[in-house]
Image (cartoon, rainbow, N blue to C red; front, side):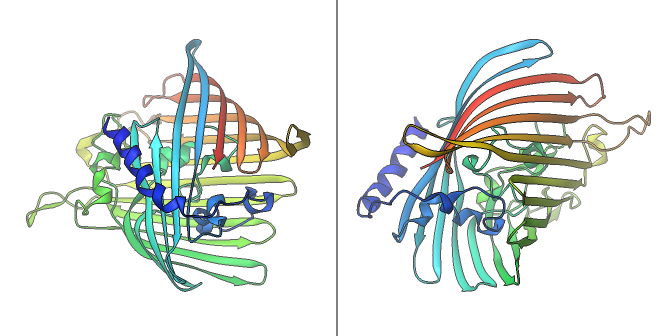
Length: 406
């Protein structure tokens, strides 16, 4: 019931403002076409269709829905349908140098309601823009550029959700900028922000899991008084695409209480590299990450001190055709490879490899009646080992999904 009132209050609060705004005309194909080389990852949050409105303040968002059937080692789980995400965007040009952006995310209906973004930018120069508020940390590209209508795959990449805990947003401040020269654009992002917490280790999963370190403290006062540092450097060629490197470092545990030292500082480091490129008609995206975690010896060997993962996907248009009112429907085929390892290393007692890894391959067939709307059919196969490296569990998933900006 509280979730219902929160949704009602949000919509009612902005209805008066937006009733005074001019109606936005339909967005052209060129404005929202999701090519890898259209814009830098840094500007992804401002490249959504609704921001192209001529009004000072704009409202928009996207919705995603899907149905799936999985078979694990020969046992099916039936047909499952859900609306995993319904996101609302709010954007305003407050003045010539100040702009505001917010994103409210409703996950699985109203099961979870999160403020994913609520930031203010002060534009001094293209090379220096000051940012503060609830920000998406630039760890890899997917954490910043993750809107479902941009992709041909229903499931998000494993490395971007299990190794890098996307979507990771938190209260922070810093700066970003860009410099264009010849056929290249160089971008940088640098922030200090509230960091992930002790849930990385102390969680119900019984493994080192970064996404379990997300908590309400990310949006309040920093729990251990030691903000994390995060940054990304990227170079984009206007014709081919973008290459980025990023890093995060922070203390995840509480080491001091009321002036008393209660534990040593335990660091978390995330290193990532990402690529987005257009090669002829093929769009290629990928991301790789390495986590280094200072885990207490008392936690045991089943908690990973080193984690890594990678994903690579390629999407190619097969044909275009006209149907009903649509003159340029695109039929695409795509393939994605995922691999993650929650615990890289060997057991001290046996010198055998620690398991706890997963590998997946996904085939996608999709239709785009417009560039901002996608209908997807995915077939996904996943192989997962437990921590003792026993025989892998095989899971096959058939899924049909729909995602669209509005």
